[in-house]
Length: 304
Image (cartoon, rainbow, N blue to C red):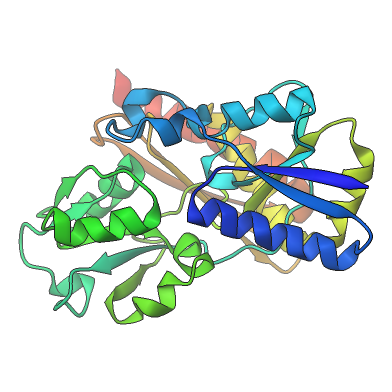
């Protein structure tokens, strides 16, 4: 049996895909896996901020087209980059163990911590979610919109004379940069920046009818990460989420219950609403959805 796995061509995307393939290969040694690199619209347009070029789907549309047409059999993505709704005929399979869900700041050389940064420090990020939450924590900060892969964004600290850039810890860890930059990295805890829904979780996307591959992927499933993905993705769907509005979500497992914290902001950041919901594990999807609807209802008060 041969399985063709689709992915974007960045170092991170290929590293993530090779890891998934290696795990599946260990469990199914008689299966042949082939990795196919696919260029997406988001990869081609590098000089425009994400909120101006369209929805989250700019990084997945071409990959999903090849999945639907049968040119590839599964695709590996960062789940945080995925739109709330998948195309008809596609689904997420099981979920490997989650990596570090936090955001981090990579500091300019010479600075020891985030609090060391001078008044009016300039931070690189293309994310409204990160910018608006950091602005609430430190109102003096200034922001410069940046795009590109992880390595490119780190280089922009020097190239654009930034005091630091904000990135997902998971990506830095997966490509081995976290250890190399350890002395310049400070994790940002979720009470300061709530992460993007499903940040640090890999999405393995398949055709719905492909039950054989779904069963194979179950061999690398991590039940707690699957539960977190379910709750956080449900929150995203409840908000009808895209790149234009800042949102965050984090599900924490507490015994037989879960707590999900959700964040929604308006387009200019003048309103940021953060709320929590708590309930039994089996209600993960419902809790995420209802929390989204409660926050949306509250946001209406800011729009009048």
